[in-house]
Structure formats: C-alpha cells, structure tokens
Image 1 (spheres, rainbow, N blue to C red):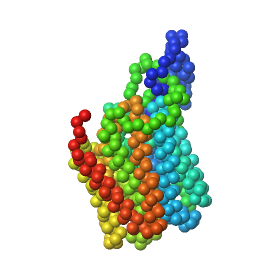
Image 2: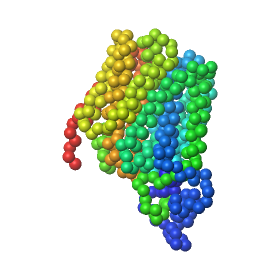
Image 3: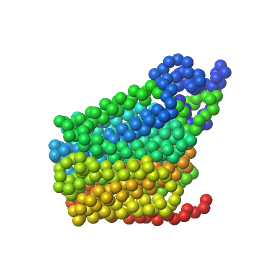
Image 4: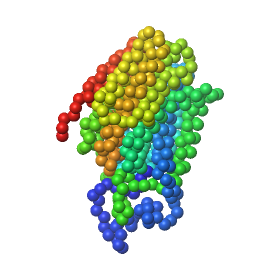
Length: 443
C-alpha cells in the first residue's frame, strides 16, 4: 500500500522556512512517516504480512463478486426472458467498463498511492452488488455489471503493484499472489454463487452477502497507514505533490525493457481469458445439456474446474524460464479444449472434466511463468501503469470473442459455436507455443 502524496518525478519545489514548499503544503497525516505527530484515521502501522493479506483479500473478493452471477444466469434468463446472446453481452459489458478505466486511471496509483484506488474500488464493488441484486430488467443488470467492471478496473493494476511494493525482495511471490487471487477469484465466484443461490432468494442473497463482506474489508483498508509506491526513497527525501497533469490519461505504451516478455504474457493472457469468458458465460448451459441436469451447482463446478486448476497450478508449480515447458503448457490448453469439444459430440462427461482440468493446469503453468518474467522486467516506478497495460490486453480477450460466440449460439446452436471457438483458440495456443519455443534474438 502506498502513500497518497507522491507525484511524478522532475517537479521543482521551492524552499519555505527551511522546508520544501511541497512538504509545507501537506497535512501532517500525509507527511513522511517520521514527521507524523497527530492521530489520524490511517495511523495503523500494520505489519507487512497484514498489508499483503488485505490487498490479496481485496483482489480475491472483487473477482469473486464479478463472477457470482455465472450459475445464476439460467434463472435470470427464465425470469427476465434473456437469450444466450443477452447473457454473453452482460458478461462483456463488465469488460467494456473495465478496460477504459484501466486505460485512463491505470497509472494513478503510481502517483496517488495504491490505497487511493483500492479502497474506493472495494466500496464501488459493493455498490455494484446491490444494483445487481435488485435488478428487474436487462438494463439494470447491465448497470450492475458495468459498476463491477469499473471497480475491478480501478483496483487491478493498483493491487498488483501494491503487492510488488510490499514484496520487493520476493517478486516471484508477488506475481504468484496476483495471479492466484485473480484466477482463484474467478474460479470461486461461480461456486460461491451456486452455493448461496440454493437459499430462499437465489437472486438476492449471494450479492447482498458479498456486499457485506466487501464493506467489512473497507474498515481495515481505511485505518491502515499507507506507504510509498515504487522503490523506497530515502527518509530525508521530501514528499512530492501530484498535479492534474500527472493524472491525465496517458497513451498506452509497451515497456521500454522486457518488451518481448510483455507481449508473450499479454498474448497468453488474451487467449486464456477468451477461454475463461466462454466457460463462465456458457459452461452452465453446456454442462446441463451434457449431464442432463438442471442443477446450477453442476454448471458452476464445470466452470470452476478450468479456472480452479489454473489457480492451483499457479500456486503449486514454481514459474520456469524453460521455453519448452511453457510451450507445452499452451499446447496442453489446446488439447484440453479438444477434449471438451469431443465430450460434446460423444456425450462423454468424463472428457469434459478431464479436458477442463488439463487445460486449466497447463494454462496456469504457462501464463504464470510468462507473467512473472514480464513483471520482473518492469520499471518499479511505472509498475502500476505497465501492469494496467498488460491487464487491458488480457481482459480484451473476455470481450469481443465472447460476443461472437454468443451470436454463433443464436444462429447455429451451442455445440457448433463452442466447437468453432475451441478450434480457433487451439490454433492460437499452438502458434504462441511455437513463438515461445523459438530462441529470442540477442539484443
């Protein structure tokens, strides 16, 4: 978590009574830590482990909330007369709201501090839950999804950068936590939603309980004292003031260092999240048809198998720089998609489960390795903006491809649409595997 006061480098400050003007203008609660004298709401100097836990929990809870509705969509289709295309559009509205926010404010945490974005994002996610829980039409659902997307967009880059700041001596652990909380939240969301939807009010209970959990998290986030972003500055270094010029939208740029690693990780993420998005939006209907059951929990479990296997692999398997292992990981994702399609045509449920686990585990190994390498090559003082650029590309995979698949379902049916998508995704996985396996040119 970072301090709210720093601004961009290169600002000149005048002297005033032996202090720099930027220091004199700041309230004491935003002054350097040794100068804090007055009590303030953010005076809890929590240990690093607690700070890491708060950031990780915030990221995990927000991703769970963004996917609570996955097993509930069939109920929404019945009550609001939604089509398969409507469902995929609702899913992509979340992404279309998230990506512009990442593009506009992704660098803000480098100047305002990490908590300045994470705390309001958690509160906004709770508001999105309330809107979604009380929705009675497609457009109200769309507003709720958009609010959830804005909240995740505010926090994604800031949370990843905060973990990097808190664990500068353990960059691998920081990347592992970022990916595990992201993938784990997406995997747990459908399962939590299905379990909570078994109550008396399946369209209300999951979202209200999740909103309460988010609002409870706001309390420790508000009272913990913030820390500086990026690399640590000397204690005598005065704080810097952020001006509106620093907060203007910036043109997205590739990192100056580690550009190849960035592009490989972004491409792997784009393909992976396209697969994840199709699973989350259509897996419940696909599984219900294949298994001949109306149970919402079954569809949620099938969706969680792919995402949960990915999260487990990212937690258990250490990242590797071995190009062959990473290439095999992307190839394994393609093979898993092939088994899922074969399950539909042969009506063999076992192939659906095996393909989901195989594809998720292989994706987790490959993407985490590429992601860790890309993050390690980033400039610490631009980590927030560069991580946001990476996540923008990744999340775009969950947008247009899903709308296309939803339209294909309307025209050709569920199985042919999923088969066509799986074929294209498998070809992209194979192409990326070949690119990873190729030895990079010397700089």
